Length: 217
Image 1 (cartoon, helix red, strand yellow):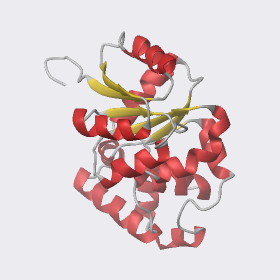
Image 2 (tube, helix red, strand yellow):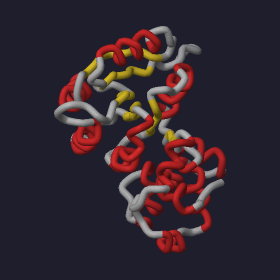
Image 3 (cartoon, one colour):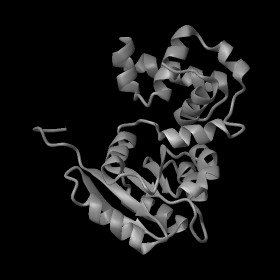
Image 4 (tube, one colour):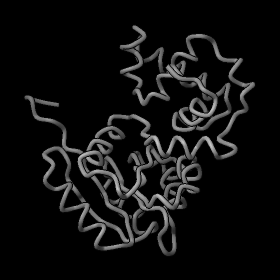
């Protein structure tokens, strides 16, 4: 932020339905801090456009012809693309929650989400938060295998459990540092130790692990 002007969040829309993309664009373009920089009709095109445009946030459908959203997520992760991906899909596709989040999605919302809530979700994942709607968290609790067994949690120190609970609460490293009165560097070290001890790939999986095993603030 500079001179009181909020940073503009650059967004890429990836959905095989043109009417959905048009609706999303129409709504998002009236937001002062969100700019739609491009669109794609399938996962492969989405990856190419994300590499070309380097958006801050990608709104990604899951079920698309050809390369689906989960495969696109895996490809973006393999390319180390820094975009935060917010999955926006239909409620009937709850079975895709865990694969999408494992593949690197920063959040998962349903297409019937209130427009203002969607704008808030975009801002949230852009800020580094892990976003799980209540319905999504409930779906996760019925799934198997989100990484690391419950016994692994006993290897965490009390401070690491505090950090993990705040990750599950959607806090960024900066917010965790402020809350626990620690340096951001120290928080990053705690996060790395948590991932190593629980054998998890990233903070999204850590949030899922915490939800499943009741590690909350």
